[in-house]
Length: 627
Image (tube, rainbow, N blue to C red):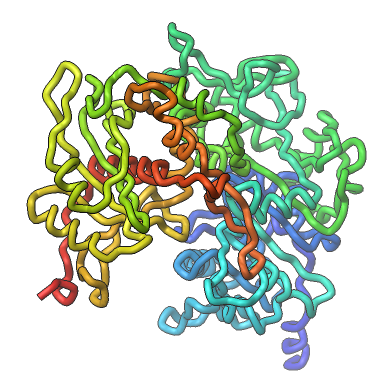
């Protein structure tokens, strides 16, 4: 009897679909049970949960929009394997902070999971570097730490937000995702769950993996005609997609878009409102690239799939709802899923977000990445300096502010023997006009000729420069002292520097350390990509005189030639760094032409953001104050 009981522990558990396990044992970290109604796209026939059960699929790629459960789904699969197929596993994310946050959430899910909670160590013995269950371990790793990704052998791996993975600057190892993949080399069969919201087209890991997979799409039925289709934004040219009413002028208004948005079926052209969303999403099926969807069989399959105890999915050959042959039917399952499928959102939420974002390049990029789950592609524009001048030159003379202007900012660049500068006037609708630009030989000249004076405004009171940012990245000597003197005079003059890494916003405050020439001085780090995208948008996509557009002071177009050429002399390029990682950067197109004035305008833009969204005054720590 004793031996029978002992050996029974070693017996494998009966096969169980991930869908069924999640319904019975899955919980969120807050104790809410897993629900097909909240995450129908995870459990839909032929979807990621089915791919996790299919023995012939090794890699699962999820190019999904934010807040659709792609990380939560990976945690469910990992927990089910810990219960039914204990094996060494790994969870890896972009950085340590994000990895630790998700590990804490996983502990919360495990505490609510009946078959696994007793396998957890007590809270005081739990580690953030690994989850140690009684039957298996889950190692925790992050992209910028080679040591956490190395010397481990795992059969299941979950790679989180892979488009945000970066190298440690001193690492000589390969791409961190390649290191992650190599952890499974010892196992003939394995499973890797790779997910993330996409970023740039040129460098996107998740898109590259998805396109090499079956590249499935989620088809949902119209509740009027029962025909299946994928969801998309309407283009106004062909039937189907989200549409909304426009104002009397023909332009979109975000509030009206939110109130009037509906989805138009591409087959029967019925207008579907939010009360149809639940029925559509909960009857969806996944269809691989190259195949079609049999409407009647799809509806019948969904009803059967909901019943517990069904046989695990065996691949597309065993999928009665698909027609035709997949373009790729290998060992990778992948998909793209937008926020149009999110039941937590409405058609109006999507429409309003698009209307709000479409005129701002940074916000539009966020909508494309985070809502549509598409990569952002930066293209070079073919405008000549003459064409750009015709678009930008205004009627106000040099050093005269337009009547709509409410504030002035200045951006200053530093070169070896000169200080290029640009003064920008800003309106309440984010409109901007460069009322003057030029070069000074010294900082004292900038103070005497530019900072100390006021500037006439057309039909109103004159303005003074409200905020100034001076680039200190090239040679900071003298700049910190100059800024401190101006601040003592009551002027907002601060050093800035382009950030070598992507930031979470257009700028970030940083305090200079004790070993610098000016401890405690605030240095503004400027996000290069974000501010370059703003420049691209206002130069090439905004119409003249529109809210958010830019202009330059009046003079013959030929006198602006050098300035206009510099504005056009930057482009996004993708290169391989010393570790063979693809990196996006902005470089001069023509090395014989500088781009100083473009940098000055970006600094003036950042100065406007700082001056209008200033946080509370920063208290300088005592140990960093100058004595």
